[in-house]
Image (cartoon, rainbow, N blue to C red; front, side, top):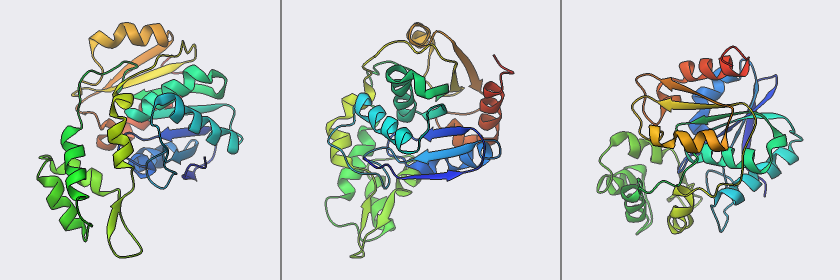
Length: 257
C-alpha cells in the first residue's frame, strides 16, 4: 500500500499521524512549527484522505501500513507523533516494531478499549449526506446539521469533502468501512510492551485520558511521561499548536526526561 504523504522541514525524521475522519492536513499547524527543527512527514492513514481504501481498520493492519511506509521512505529511526486514533496506530507500531521508533508521542488517547461510542451522531450525519449525490458543501453541511450540533465538528468533517470529476462531492474517508469496523477503532488489541521513551499529552478539558487509564499506560509504556496542556480539549494540537510543539520539542531534546 502506498500512503499519501507530504514532507516539510529538515533534520531528524518525525512522523505525524492524524485521527479518525481526518487527514494529513489536520496536523498542518503542528507540522509547520515542528518543521523548524525536524523533517516532518504527514501521512493519510488507510481509508482516509488520498490514501488507498482497505477492508479493515484494526490497529495491527493500520500499523503495518505505516511500517510499510517507513520502509518505502527508508526511515529506520523516527519519532512518531499520533493524535487520537492516530495515537493508537502509533502505539501499535511501537509495540509491533519498536526498532523503528526513536521516540513516541501520543496525543490525548490511551492504550485501552473504550466502551463508549462517541461518533454515532457523526456517522448518522455522514450517512444522511450520502443518501443522495452531494451537490454542494452547503447541502452537505445542512445534512450534517440534522445530526451534529457542534459547528466545529461539522467544519472539521467538511475539510474532507472533495469535489469529483462529475461536479458532485464525496467524502475522502471510507464511511462504510469505518462504520462497519467502528469497534476495532474504539478497541485495543494490546501487543506487548514498548520500552522506549514515550510522552502522553492530555488536553486538560478532555476525558480521553483519565486516572483509570494510568495502570494500562504504565504497564505497556513503562518509560512514559505525561504532560497536560492547559485550557485545551481533545483537539489540543489545533487549539494550541505552538504550545504542543514546544512541549514535544522539549521532550525530544531531553530536557523533560
